[in-house]
Amino acid sequence: MSHGRFDNPVVAALAGFWDIFRKQENADKLNDSHRFEGKKVIITGTSSGLGFALAVDMARRGAHVIMAGRSRIPEAGEMVMKQSGSRNVEMRYLDLSKIETIHAFVDGLVRDGIRPDVTVLNAGVALPKARKTASGQDEMFLVNYLSNVILTNLMVNRGVITPPVNGNLRQRIVFISSDSHQGSSAIDYSEFGLFYDYGVSKGIENYSYFKLVLNTYATEFSRRINNGVVNAGVNVICPGPVHSNIIREAPLPLRMILGAIFRIIFRSPAKAALPVVYMSFSDDYEGKTNEYLHMFNTKKMDPKVYLPEEGEKLWKESIRVWKEADPDFSEPILDKASI
Ligand SMILES: NC(=O)c1ccc[n+]([C@@H]2O[C@H](COP(=O)([O-])OP(=O)(O)OC[C@H]3O[C@@H](n4cnc5c(N)ncnc54)[C@H](OP(=O)(O)O)[C@@H]3O)[C@@H](O)[C@H]2O)c1
Image 1 (cartoon, helix red, strand yellow):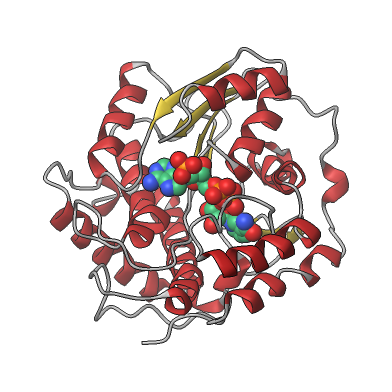
Image 2: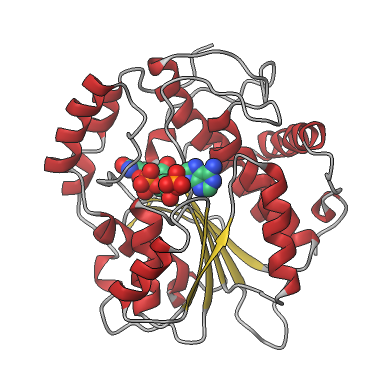
């Protein structure tokens, strides 16, 4: 069935164009003097684009940055150190299309006693056609959606994300999404997690649709981890149109058209990173959860995202697909009670 608001990639790219000129209401709340010494942040998908720029910005502001990526190890980390002037940067291997690496990544966090103040779930792909992963799912479904379910649940199960201790600030989880999720069709459970073939236009629809699914999960995760008391800030942000590598797999003619649009109109990753830095560390978000930013503007997500019955159903279906896909599946403790 049809999922997205856009079935044309050029229209989808241009849709972000007008957003750049909207007034940025919170833009003055982050400036160069804001520092985050003593804070620890995990960012996924840091080899390029927004994730790389986030690593540079946060490291420059004094945070301990853990770059979780599948490529350019250690080059990307060395570049981040050089550009930020900080040595407080490390790289860890994480390929979100391979579930076993998510387990190994969380094992490493537990082994090293890492309890991040902020986790930014940034990695994402835009694929021109369906591609089956070793565990049997479509790669875009797994990387852009299900891997985040697995990673966040394992982090909670293994005590990497826990309630605030000794008066510490609450941990934050920031989901990088896209405002293109607005208007995507309701979640279709008849095909949920199943692999099927698709081409470019369906791929563009699915990209937006999986962001709607991701936002619905983030909202349900926020409900479950908090259960009436804010234990963790679970928030969602769209960075706006970013001149990044996201179209790298598009067919050549399309890549040339989109590349020109990206170059001329889209914002640099360094600029797009700023609202994410703000949402990750600002006191304005202390004690808050299930917030949404579109660049620096506070907004609501698509109304479907907030329906408790949708969240409940999506949670169950996601855990079912995870269980089927993963021989090392472990029952989420958030299934039983709040932490
Ligand atoms: N560009 C935009 O206009 C735009 C707009 C709204 C939202 N976003 C979102 O912003 C996020 C970052 O995208 P971007 O625009 O910065 O694109 P990008 O330059 O292509 O960066 C994507 C990052 O995700 C990583 N990644 C891809 N597959 C992975 C996997 N299997 N395991 C681990 N990491 C993986 C990539 O690593 P490799 O280099 O190893 O592949 C890369 O570091 C995405 O969630 C995207 O949906 C982008």
